[in-house]
Image (cartoon, rainbow, N blue to C red; front, side, top):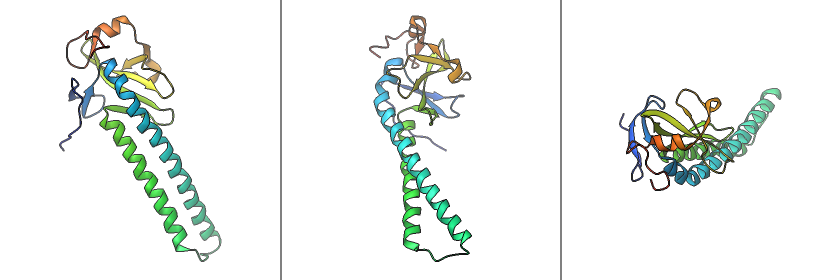
Length: 174
């Protein structure tokens, strides 16, 4: 399978053990620049997932009523409309999730809006970690550590992380 993805100027892509495919590496600045787009897609995904769940519950309730009444007559157009709403919500959620991936981010927990951006720190693959509601990316963690391993981004991290270019690139300009 060949994977083609949009890559911003200055970003680097490489095979990733963390993501299981090609990964885009970001500087802190690049990840923060991508946040508005990622957050918009994340909010869309959450909205459409809630719509999907409502439609699925209504579908399940209708199916249960039909079974309980011994196969009562149903209005097929109502059931078709409900199924179409459920399917449209599922497709819209997938489109939103694809938008996040195309931006180079990885959703780790949709329920809490947890997203990682890959970066390199001392040459090792690590994650810039952001949670919906946070005003900026302020934490990072090792690829295997997850949310509980979050550490504050400090000067030492800023000097030694990169997007695959020069280590210590000024994150305000790259």
